[in-house]
Length: 247
Ligand SMILES: Nc1ncnc2c1ncn2[C@@H]1O[C@H](COP(=O)(O)OP(=O)(O)OP(=O)(O)O)[C@@H](O)[C@H]1O
Ligand SMILES: [Mg+2]
Image 1 (cartoon, rainbow, N blue to C red):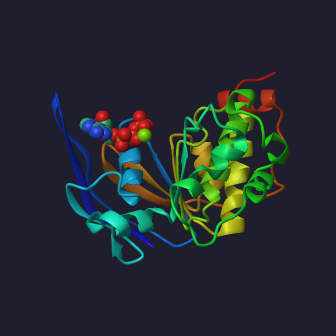
Image 2: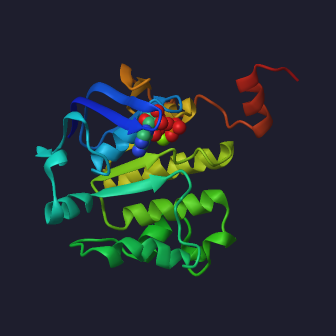
Image 3: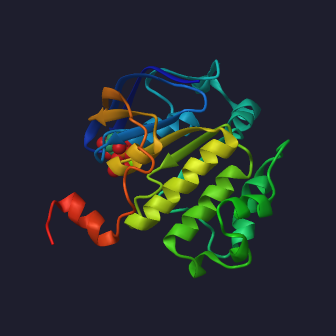
């Protein structure tokens, strides 16, 4: 379980203090897919960065499986972080390394006890045939699949995704949502997905917190998408539905 207990964060900047988070209180259950939604600057990434201790709260505690994350140092911190995978908006791939080398990178940084193989994860994200290509030869959606494969190879128990689809178009977003969903089902990770895209939250998450100006204003249960009810839409139909236009 990931618990935020009265977590606040004040950043000091040139323009003065920024109250990035104010008394955030929420518990995210094991194996849950939890969404964090909010406008730019609401504090979404800061909340995510507390979970892997890239940022420290000014007050309050972040507790993961009974461990106070704020107190971890040195080897304990490194071991704790080994349980966490991250997926980024801009993919964060190394352009001078092949797909296979990018995916294997986490394994070269730390020793892990039980990991997946490069072939297994690339097969899982549907990129087995791109193994020896370089990121510049891939589409955005394919790059994000590599990012997901790289996050999964260490068999993390927590997967943090910060705007995983925000650099992608509508149909590629759906593909990546499906890959993340499959990853959740296959590997039973606890997943926190930060996004400003409500469709992503609806398709992927079981619950979501709305962050407004550093405060959680609502925590919602998301109704699961009704399989089969909606017929496959064409791109034009999707645009018309969202814009409310007519043929
Ligand atoms: N290192 C920092 N120093 C100063 N201010 C910061 C720092 N990091 C974040 N902030 C401020 O804290 C607030 C929350 O930032 P955060 O990045 O968490 O927002 P966000 O919801 O992820 O936004 P976006 O959707 O644009 O990514 C913003 O006002 C931001 O400017
Ligand atoms: Mg952010």
